Amino acid sequence: MHLHGGLTPAPYDGWAENLSAPGQYAVFHYPVDQRAALLWYHDHVMGVTKFSVYAGLAGLWIVRDDRERELELPEGPSFEIPLLIQDRNFDLDDQGRLTGRLVHKTDPEVMEAFAPFTMVNGKVWPVLEVEPATYRFRVLNGSNARTYRLVLLRDGEPDLGRIVQIGTDHGLFRAPVPVPAGGLVLSSAERADLLVDFSHLDPGTELTLLNTARAPFDGSPSAFTDQEDAADVDGLLPYPHVMRFRLTDGPTARRPVPPELATDYEPPAATRFARVPHRAIALVERELEGRPSMLTMRELAPAKGDDAGPVVTVTDGRATVRYRAVAARFEDATTFFPVLDEDEVWQFINLTDDTHPIHVHLDPFQILARHPIRYEIPEDGIGKRDLAAEIKLERDPDDRLDHAIDDNERGLKDTVRVNPNEIVEIGVRFTRYSGRYMYHCHILEHEDRDMMRPFVTMPAELMPFMHEHRHHMFHGSMTM
View 1 (cartoon, helix red, strand yellow):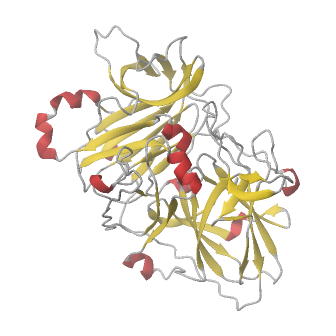
View 2 (cartoon, one colour):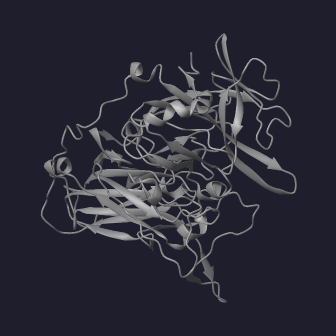
View 3 (cartoon, helix red, strand yellow):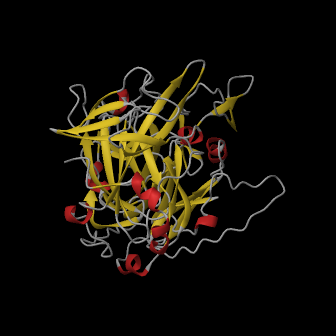
């Protein structure tokens, strides 16, 4: 069992191969000595995580601290409400009626399962009665694969101005931010801490929460114009409704939004990460004849001058850096050995057509940059481990994405969206526990298809004996 977002000792982190057979049991220790945040727990067994989480082996875990309580934010019933959003499908009886029995696709050719019905806290399209007050919603996208772009509607028109976001995966921002104009985007495992002001709305007023994100998600902006045309069958979004809020009678209880929230972290300074160890990971889909495609994360290391095999070149203007793939599958030897209490930059290079939510276990990170790229992969350029590609740090003419870091991504994260034609850089620092952990795509069907790799956090005292593994890093940025 993995406590997602938890600062957990390695033996209790939910290593994918530490499974328990029927009749066995395991005892886990979660210290939960960390800042306030919405975490969640879920099964993490190799190959079947998609089934166990879909079947319900997942739940929310709220951590409190003194700083959060000093701010006098809504806490507990009835004005703090967790919203666990998941897509599900159900079996039919002989008369074609929904039975409530869960159905998940098992065809190995199916890369992801995008179920048609949206559930919130276990109910399909629920209605929540709210008073004219400020509510705090702790939102988690607990779907296997679907990304949501959530838009709040009143009288058929977007009404996002009454929403303020105060936190993300690992808790509070430094200051509140508005929800992006196009809607709140949450990929699988991402969280949002929201304050929604329902004051000054008349009893009987209804607001609808709608999803406008096509599937598979590729970061493209929404084509949504109004509630009537929100359904998108071609985009695997036949039923865009998520839930509805209905105003009831009650005293008006509007809470002011604190202008300053967290004080325990700073925005990432460019100089801090300029010369620290960098690691590069290419996200790759390998098509196999007669078999389902294989999704992998190719860990890259600087290529030596005499390397004659396939290489990945990254060109920024006149400067070119050469890499070779040193690991691809989960079972390949570990190549990442970050040192405790040392900064690193991890660079995720998306060479696929879809957005991948990448989750790093253990400590949170901060997003440093998004860079648009163009790339070419030669025929047979994707081998079992080898990879050949030419990457240029420039925009593809057909690329419609802005590749910007949204304001609501500038907090402490544990999951980051990596869009097509994009390099995402994150600043990481592991601070507490040494041991064996994982990072992976949080589209669970991708994770189960081997889009997952191990890393081992190391105390500095052991690194003199790990010299060989230092060759898998480079210093400075690939973006010159």
